[in-house]
Image (cartoon, rainbow, N blue to C red; front, side, top):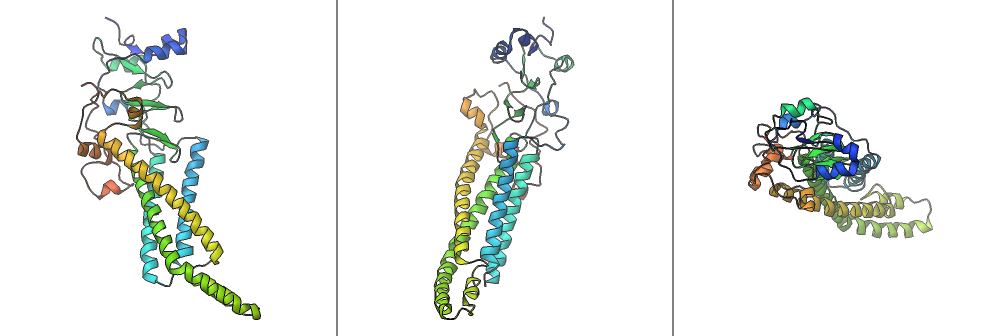
Length: 334
C-alpha cells in the first residue's frame, strides 16, 4: 500500500518533469474526500484581509467617490435648497441610510476573507493527518501549494485558492466566495436602491423646479438688462438649487447617467447572485459546466447557508456575520 504522501497529487514530481506535466497530472479526475471546514479554514480567517492589487484599489476608490458624488448632488443640489422641509428630511435620511449600508457592505465584501484555503499546507504531516483510505486522493494546487478541497478555485489576483469562488470583482477588490458572498449581494442590492432613489428624485426636481427656475431666470435677466445693479439673477437661481441652472443641469445629467448605469449593472449582478445561491452553483462552475459532486439542497436551505440562520432583519445587515453552517461538513462525494 502506498503511503499517504504518495496518494497526493503534488508539484514535487511535476517540478522534475516540468510545470506542464504537473498540471496534467493534477487535472486528472480523482475521488476527493470530505474535509471539515475547520480543517481547511485558515487560522488567520478572522484577521484583516486586503488584496494589494492596483486595479482593484483604484476601482474601489472610484466606487466610493461615485457614491459620495451622488450624495453631494442629492443633498446640496436638490434637497437642502428645497422649500419642502418634510420632503428634504425624509428623502435625505432614506438616501443616506441606503448609501451608508451600501458602503458598509462594500467594505465588508472587500476586507473579509472570501474563504481562502491555507497556503502551503500540503505537508507530509498534514496529509498523514487526513488518514486517507486506499484509493482516495486529495488535490494539491500547483500554484499555491495547498490541499485544495472540492468547489475551490485558484484566483490569479488573490494568489490563493478560494472556497466556492464565484468570481473576482475588481469593484470590491476581492474574490466573491463562501465567506463574503452575503456582503457582495447586499452591496449590489443597496447600490441598486440608491441609484433608483436618486433617479426618482432627479425626475421630481426637473418637474417641479427646473422649468420654473429657467422661466424666472430669463425674466430676471431681461429686467436686469436695463439696470445692472439689480440682483434678481442671484435671487432666482437659489430658489430650487444652490447652483446656477446650467451648473445644476450638468450635475443632474451626470447623476442620471451614473444612476442609470449602476442601476442596470447592480440589478443584473444582484439577480445573477441570487440565482447562483438558489441553485447552489457558482459562476465559475456554471461557465466550466462542472459535474455536480455535492449534495443538492432546497433553495431556502441554500439562502440560509449564505445569509445565516434563521431568517431575520440581520440578513440585510452588513454588520452581522452569518455562520455559514459551521457545524456542517463539506459533502463532496455523493
